[in-house]
Image 1 (cartoon, one colour):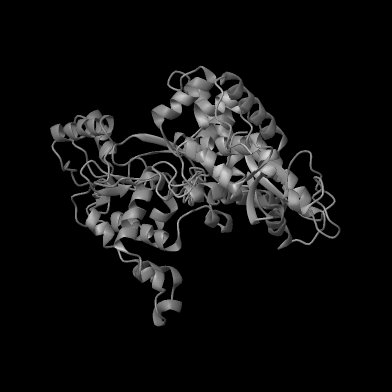
Image 2: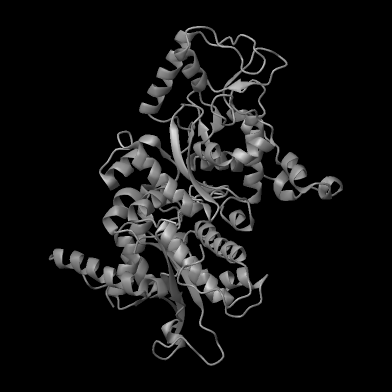
Amino acid sequence: MPSLNWKHHALVQALMTRGPLKEKDFHAIFSGLTGKSPGAHQGLFNEYLLNINKELSSCQFELRACRDQYVGQVCYGVVNNVADEQSKLGTKYTVQQIAFFKGILEAIAQDVIAQGSISNIEALNIRLENQVLSTQGSQLLNGPLPAAFRNFTMSQKEKTLDEFVQDQWLCCTPDGKIGLGVRSCLDLRGWFRNLDVPFCEVCNEAVVKGELCQNEGCAVRIHHYCLKNKFSRRSGEILCPRCGLKWQNQLPKAEILDEEEEANDAIQSQPAQRPKRKRTKTNETHEKDAVGCGSSQSSVPNSDFRRITRSSSRPASQR
Amino acid sequence: MAGATQDFSQFDISKEEIDKLVAEVVRYVLFKTHQNSGCPIKREELVQLVTKNYSQRALPAHVINAAKEKLSNAFGYELRELLRCRPSSATQGRSTQQTGVAEAKSYVLISQLPAEVYKKYVEDENSAHLSGFTFVVISIVHLAGGKIPEDILWRHLKRMGLCETDASHPVFGNAKQALETLVQQRYLQKDKVNGPEGNTLFYELAERALDGPVSEKMKEYISEIVSKDVVPVDVDEAE
């Protein structure tokens, strides 16, 4: 196995300490370290990532990229691939907070029209009890629910939502709703599979926010940006890859372009803040766990996230 | 993947099993460090990961060493070993061993990247205030000779704008908790000393702050700051 040098380590540690990074930031680090830009030196960039992953894979971690489903932007992170005993440690969230998170994820992922987000109010009304039943099986069906789950107050939920957004497990969409954050997209693939969330025909990633085939019996989903690529390249009509029905793009082409421009504007201006919350810096130093690790941490939950390594762990302190 | 320098042939265990054990230890260290915000991990916890399934005596040491190599090769982290030190009032000199008491070793992860690289690419701006706080507190204790009474420490911090009673400081939140975290991370340790006026609580430098490289750098930085500051300051507080 080729051994890694300090440049590889810097890339990995950057993701683990700072969490998932947008493509341009990650590329900037690469350029700074090697003096070469990934765009012009694609082969070198890929080689770096490949070598890093060869080492990381022995520990069940992976450096991967995914597209943020809300703005179509690519992000990189170090994620945790296996949910084992160790990764369960990799989170600073309490059991109730995790149950709350699962509830939110399910609500977003199971939206039949794949809007990819839920409103603030819906999020705050998520009931933790449903999560408890599903994770603990028959044991709790007859017994009383743990008081802590019932007593998870509104203000605790608000605070927790803030933390999730800060840690990038969830995000605030430009229209003020709650959507999945970058860490969730990077790290929770397996989880989406379990929930039977359809995967995109074009890029094979879970479609939480995207478009559906007009055919009622057909479960095909495609991301907005994947569709855009398809439409812009062909001059004829697009047919649904599975059922063959002519694919109506649900927004007229002009609007799709506008939407993208709007999204870009939103990124350049102040990122959407949750209304009225002043966030005091708490004493958290986090790692990504998975560094951006994985499903815990975490990082995050990690891994990369936290849980993810959110987990991604952020383990190191400089001497 | 088992470290090239570790010889596992003496154990009757397959390579896959060794690799798995090493991966478990590496993952434990990474996740736990995240969860407890950089507080040292006890060696005993790592040993248990091995001994819960395997009983060979020398195996834990080998696995931990292989994990050390792995962390260094794959991530660029050093698994630094610290020896838990006891408060100075409890021992004679610097000896940490008493008959029958095992040394309490613990580990922290330290980045092996050159300082400029770390600062430029890796450091998380959101936690810079914590590093700053750590540095300031350790410097104060260091300049006081390695040990300082609690109220004097807070007096110095107050001069810099942080009060003991601050429960919602805009940057540090609960001030007391921020200081307590340094104790948990083993930069400081607490020591109660019996004095003529009753018990006094002292803060002392603990193993993480006394660790060779850290201590050296601290001295460098402090002397840099002190040599710049030529204006004499009120020293009536310095005891």
